[in-house]
Length: 174
Ligand SMILES: [Zn+2]
Ligand SMILES: [Zn+2]
Image (cartoon, rainbow, N blue to C red):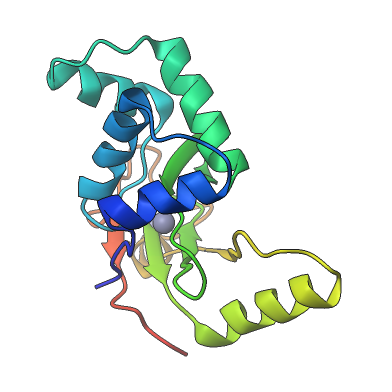
């Protein structure tokens, strides 16, 4: 399983190192991400709803602002996996970044880790005088289920993939 490697303490010190405080609001938001089953990504609206269900009273604009800030400083990462929808997930520090493989038809997403890609990202960042925050590769393809059903031209318009959703590739290191 791909595990988020932040603990409550390391998250706090990481934030402090970057000059930000772990305010109660930020803590609540990051806690949702920390508890998320691996492989899940949340939109701002998803997050807002989860907080509401938990009885937290954070406005949607606070949620947006916090997500933006956390993504900008590399604590969260913004992923745009399908249809221009922005989603967020925890961005663990190097070398724990993971990558995505996305089906363009059903948006099924597979997460994977690859040491080679992570190393390459770090090497390139350092060579250019950058401090690495994140390294992500998104690979697009079509799943076998869609291909078997005649993708693209013969695929029934109401077809929905039986496996649609998220898949957790178990850290397949290629
Ligand atoms: Zn992911
Ligand atoms: Zn598919």
